[in-house]
Length: 237
Ligand SMILES: C[S@@+](CC[C@H](N)C(=O)[O-])C[C@H]1O[C@@H](n2cnc3c(N)ncnc32)[C@H](O)[C@@H]1O
Image 1 (cartoon, rainbow, N blue to C red):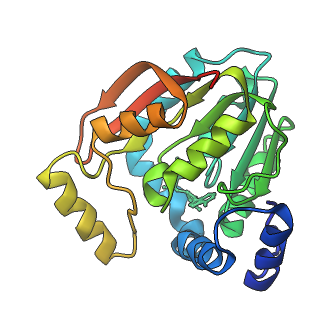
Image 2: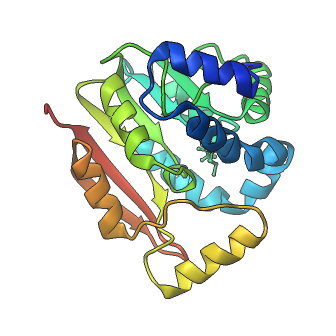
């Protein structure tokens, strides 16, 4: 569902038209709650993320190894496009969506200066993507499923738009892995950074499997919380 310039009320109507199963009032509250923090944080996001440059560089390297020059890639919850812009030179085309318009505006600005032409940034809700079934070779969801209230819905959408045997690369912080991670997670919540889904590495892997993905590789970046980086393939049923 494209959301550029959409108000909460029009978002409700759009959803009713596209026949999304979620109750519309709940969906609306959920969507505005999920994007509120990121709308405000957008101008500072890249500066904040500079401290994770080492991990993101390793992530970028891992992702790049999985890509092919003919791939059509969808990145869900791209934020300011850190990964989308990084991988664009290795693939045919990247469509990168995020629910937060301010985040997408930053991403579009960054794509303009080196004139990157094969990345299309769009404001969309990951729970109801506007794309036809089986459009993409690869779907990326980086550092995002844990900030979503219903990651299962998003994984099902990712599966729907992936081609048969399409690949999912979804590095996710596992805030429920141990007591220390849970404490850190709650402290982050006090600063407005809400983690809705506190996965352990096991429960995260189980969520991928339950939503129709076969995990082919799982690397874990140690930390509090740890970052689980699975490579997975869409299963046929
Ligand atoms: C921690 S940031 C990660 C951004 C980017 N993937 C990165 O690694 O830099 C989480 C992102 O998820 C986005 N997001 C949250 N809920 C979403 C939804 N329902 N649909 C699309 N994006 C969503 C937020 O707007 C935010 O940009």
